[in-house]
Image 1 (tube, rainbow, N blue to C red):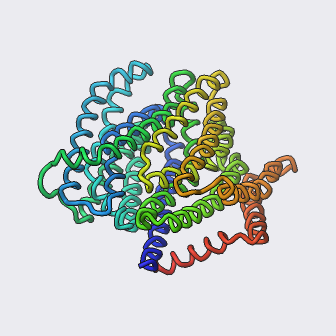
Image 2 (image 1 turned 135 degrees about the horizontal axis):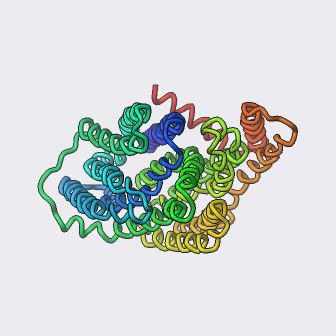
Image 3 (image 1 turned 60 degrees about the horizontal axis):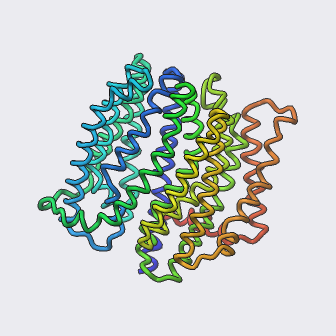
Length: 483
């Protein structure tokens, strides 16, 4: 039983990393082309709609996906009830947003936003139709099927966007990419996942799951509103071009960190759920996941700071140079983002959705305060506030959640800080390579990547870290299992 769970976990982690990493790589490649075909300020116009789309996706799900994943046994009627609930809510939200579109356009003095937003908002309606299929795959730890479907949908929608941009459709190319990806993914999930509604809608099932789900919903709403409010503020206070710069700085930070965070978190929650209420075993599994995350996350975050200039120079046209300082500042707080994500997984496993909500309220109050203080310092001031809040929220969140499994501050320190310190020693001195007269962007990228990574692994190895060997064994095992 334990070996079978271990094998399933290894496979799930491998395919989850491929899924999240593949999505980010696809976005990276396609945007590399689209940034040269679409004006910077047009890209920023789409960026200001991110908050509305994120909120709509959360409202249509309402936290019931997590509730279904958490339940050991789920009846067909419960699946059906959530399915019909999600669809009903998504259609209602779309109607509200459809009617509100002229107000969005008026606020930004951009007439195109009326029709553009009405089209883009179709994406969350399509997503609602495949929520239960996605839940079924996650409960089975079948990330392989999910990965194939998601990457196929991402590739097709990206190619369509490039073709449209080449033909001069401009900002509508980006809108079509979002909507088509949602439509294709939902369609493929319906084709390849053998689930269909059975019976009718049962409000009792929704009411039973509501206390847990609604707390998660409020938590996620707070998180999304505060995370996505920055494009709204930047677009109104500064310019759409700076919205685009912030969006790409944020995206370049999130590409590696979301691969780590979503890849590990998406498996950590069902894994902890499968472990059950064995306190000692649950703590042991969670500590191991924390160590692996810290081992990967800190060097990646610091490497982003060092590689920011050559990365932006390669990836984006010359007029996007203002992305560099934004990327470097966001990477500081981004280094702890994957670890903060584990806080949610642990508290969901313990059924502490109320605690998640309180932590997120604390985090988002800090975020709003940081906006009030830092907005006078421009976009760089705003992103500095984001990084500081992320670090503070992680420290508070891991301390509070750790209490649920008797994970004390001394153990947290031992599992996290050594990797942060070693990463700092290995990568930060490489920031001064430019002072040596090296101007070639490829050398400025290659030297930190090779020298910093080798030094980091060498120091970790000399310190006798167990997690290095565990990670190597995990990668070997994952590749063997997927052949």
